[in-house]
Length: 593
Image (cartoon, rainbow, N blue to C red):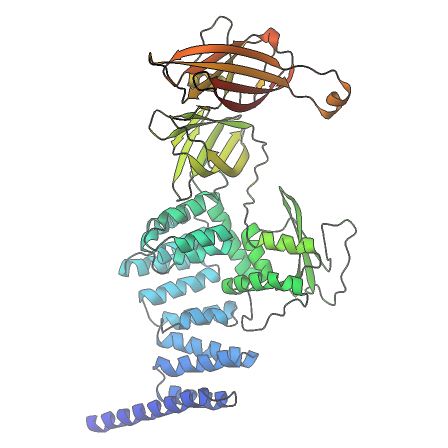
C-alpha cells in the first residue's frame, strides 16, 4: 500500500513538473501563448494545491495581461498563494499592484491566518488590519510576532502606526522611537519607505549618500526638523503623518494600479507627469493622494473649476464631478492653486499651476497652527572652547526652544524662558525656533550660518545693546544679552549699554593692542519722511582705545539725551591701528519709544 502511494506521488510530481515546464514555454511565446500557459499552471495547481509555484506563475500571467481580467487572475492567484505560504518570493510586494478593497484585504488576512503564529504571516496580517483601520487587532498580532522573533525597524514602525490608528499616542511615539533606535541595522529600508513619501530632493540625495549602518542620525534629523512644536516632548508631525496615511488609504489610493494613466498632451506638462506619476504609483496613490500626504487637506477645493487662485476662474466642461478638481493651499509664499483630472493625475492649465505642482510634490508642511509672530534675535561670540562659537537666541514669550541641525544630522538644543545659548562649531545649519506666549505658538524655520572667529583675522562679535540704570557699572556679555529686549524696542529716557568683542587685534611687544572704534546710530526713516522731512544726521561716537591682549571687550554707555524717539540702525566699526586693518559689525536695527 505504501509502495503504491509513493508511486502515485511520484507520478503526480512528474505530471506537475511537466505541466509547469509546458506552461513556462507557452508563457515565453507571443501574447496568444499566455492563456495556454494559464491553463497549464491551473492544471498543475489542481494536482499540487499546496505547491506555491503554480499559483505564482498564474499571478505572472495575470500581470502580463494587464486588463481587468488579468488583474482578477493575478489577485485570485495571490490570495490562494497566501493560504499556501505567507512569504513566497516577491508575492507580498506584488499584492500592492492589484485592485484591493476592504473585502480583498479581509480575504488576504483570512488566508494568512491559516499559518497560525508564524511571525511573517502575523506581520502581513497586521499590515492588512492597519489598512482596514483595525489598529488594536494589528498591534496584538505584532506583539505575538515580536515575542517569537527579534524586533526590527519594520515591526516597530508597524506597531507605531497601529497604536496611532488606535488612538494610543504615547505608545505610537514610543514605538517610533524604537524604530529609530534600530535605524543603523535597518537592512530592509523600512524607515526610508516611510520617509521618502514626504522627503525633499535634497533629503533623497543625502539618504543615498549615507551608507547603511550610519543612517540613524539622518532619520532623527529628518523627523526632528519637521517637529511643529519644539517645546513639547512629542513630535506632533508624526501623529499628523499617520493620520494622513490613514486618510489617503481610504480616499486617494490607486484602486487599479495596473490601469494606464493618461498623460497630458501638452509637452511642457509631461515633465511634471514624468516626475509625479512614478512617485504616486510607487506610493500606491493618486496625484491627489501624494499632495495630501505631503501637505494635508487643501485650504480650498472645488469640482469643475480650473483655477481657484483667480477671481474670474473658469468653470470647466464637466460630465462628472470627477473630471477635474481644483485645490488651493495658502502658504507663506502666497496661494498655490493646482488642478487634477480624473481624480488621478495633475492637469495644469497654466504655467503657474505647473510651478505650484512641482513645488508641492517636493515639499511638505504641518497644519499645526502657529499664528504668533515670533520676535527674536540671535547673536554670535567666540567661545572659550577652541574652535567653537557661542550662539545666543532670545524670543519674546513665556518660553522658547531653539535647535540647530548640522548637515550630518546632529543637533544642538536649548529650552528656557529667557536667554538661550548653544555652543557649536561654525558652519551652515538649519534653525528651528519656537515660542509660546499664553498658549499661542510661534514658529521659525530657516537656514542659519554660525560665524567662526580666527585669532589671526580682525573680526567683531555681534553687537549687544541693553538698557541700564544710571551710574551702574558696565555689564559683561551675558548680562548685556539678558537685558537686551527680544523685539529690540527700548524705552526713551533710559541709558543704553553697548557691548562688542574684538578678535584678532595685533599686539605690541608689551602685549597691548591699539584700535579705533566708531559707533554710528543712523536714523531709519520711512519713504515719506525721506521725501518730505528734514534729514537727520547719524549719532556718532569715536574713540582711540588701548587694551591688554588681542581680544578686548569694547563697551560704551549711550546717554538718553543723544537718542530721541525713532528707529535707528546701529553699526560698530573697528580699525586695528597697528596694522591699519578695518572690520565692521553690522547691525542692529532698534526702536526708541
